[in-house]
Amino acid sequence: MDAIVTKGLTKVYDKKIKAVDHVDMDIPSGSIFGLLGPNGAGKTTIIKVLTGLSDITEGDAWIAGFNVRKEPMRVKARVGWVAAEVILDDDLSAWENLWLQARLQRLGDWKDRAGQLLEFFELNDRRKDKVAGFSTGMRKKLEIALALLHQPEVIFMDEPTIGLDANVRRMLWDLITGVNRQFGVTVLLTTHYIEEADRLCDRVSIIDQGKFVASGTPSELKNRVHEDFVEIETSESVTAEKLSAIPGVSNVKSQGKAWVLRVPSAEETLPHIFQALRTDGIRRINVEKPSLESVFLDITGKHLDQAGADVQDFRKFYMNVRRARR
Ligand SMILES: Nc1ncnc2c1ncn2[C@@H]1O[C@H](COP(=O)(O)OP(=O)(O)OP(=O)(O)O)[C@@H](O)[C@H]1O
Ligand SMILES: [Mg+2]
Image (tube, rainbow, N blue to C red; front, side):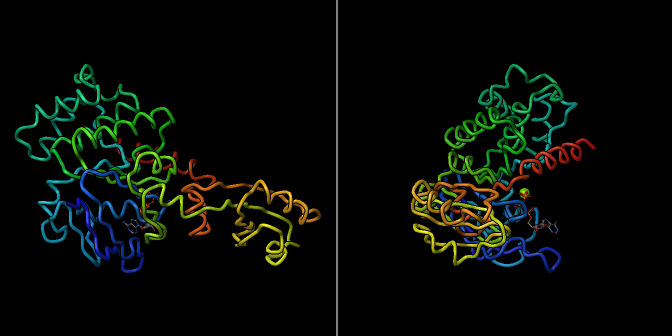
């Protein structure tokens, strides 16, 4: 059975901002699905409309067979959500945070499940400790535990590893896989980390400006691009014609101040490029081997992990922390 289905799912904010634009999804039960896209692509909005937090403008969606517009309460009972924002209460212990979550969701029988979750996330011996003293990784674990408390069939994770260092990120990848296997939960996560989508997800859709521009398993997506990309920034004297004439260059696209050349093999073509552009002052050169990054570059002409994206991540991360504390 499909855990999540959408048909022509569309969200327009304020009658003018089309954040999600006719998106079709069918995500099998028990899988891990990734929405990969740059800032502002519409990832969070998809989660908001699927969880009933925001209205659907057009189209339809079903979760575990229930219609999101017509049966919102049934849908809410079956979905968990790990927001990009921090939601824990620092002044409460791990156990008290679980208790609060159970109260908010009016859960009767929650203690066994809470115990199981603390065990699974290896937080059992810290259950009575205030969350204020938890590490980033422990906080993230507890947030996921809260989202799983009511035994949802589907869990949404909005940028689960944003702002985390590489070790904690890897630990979380293992945990997300573990949650998926152990609890049989379907996972929809958003990310703009290529490696995260590649390593973690059974299937990935690449989203740009509200539209799905490519979908498939990570290897299917990577197989779409057999060629290498050479990106160069040069002086103004260079033209597309000049670049197209270089032996081995099969396609030329301009991208702002730079050019993106498709070549069967960067190693073989680079000497020809240097030869042809001898007098044109190459300012920057970058080789991209087939990856989800080059798929994105090929389709949209843009980079996913733009320089500065990480800086932005941190800013967003700390902003969210501050907002949550207020
Ligand atoms: N409440 C809102 N009102 C108006 N516009 C909104 C609202 N929320 C999001 N948008 C707009 O919708 C678009 C998609 O935003 P969304 O937050 O879904 O992107 P995202 O892919 O999650 O980005 P990020 O990676 O930065 O989290 C953006 O243009 C954003 O400005
Ligand atoms: Mg977002």
